[in-house]
Image (cartoon, rainbow, N blue to C red; front, side):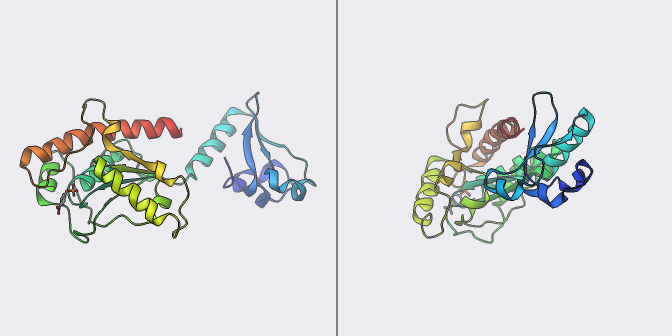
Length: 239
Ligand code: 4NP
């Protein structure tokens, strides 16, 4: 845990300016106390202060402190990607948003979708996809946009609907990474949506665009399964 805690902790040592703590690491000792240590690269500047500071030893203060650190965490960001960003990924965005909302976690997430092509840019989702989702109580509201280089920087997780989408994302990353100075391992953020499905054995969310109504239902079945597991996984890996 780093920074963001100073305003709560002014009481902990009157001789120390609260801004000092913005750069410090909050640690928990074996007996449960919380204390700050200076960051390794600033030890000289900090050496005149008597580190480590114990900042909380009662469990209620400690829990409040942890809660306030968690509240200042940036939201976890998820981008869903398909080809046109008018059928599968807007539906994934809507299904995941619905599940996140039902669990009261909307402030903890940033959720978006995009397409590997820009052909439908500016268009709302396909009316067949919106109608199928609406029957399940889910509003699909996103407007199509193509994937952009900054997505690899901004998003924590990028979920491809099928293997072609995943390959296209990885090729785009290869093309952009040098010029756009993208983090070297940002391609690892790309995963297949169906890798989170528990009740279905499909490996891809099939493209419903040229098919009939059953295709749209199948998309939603897969997404409802995958998005539940996705949320559980994110929560358990980030708690
Ligand atoms: P999506 O579906 O990738 O799930 O949005 C498609 C949308 C448009 C096209 C193909 C698939 N298209 O060929 O225009």
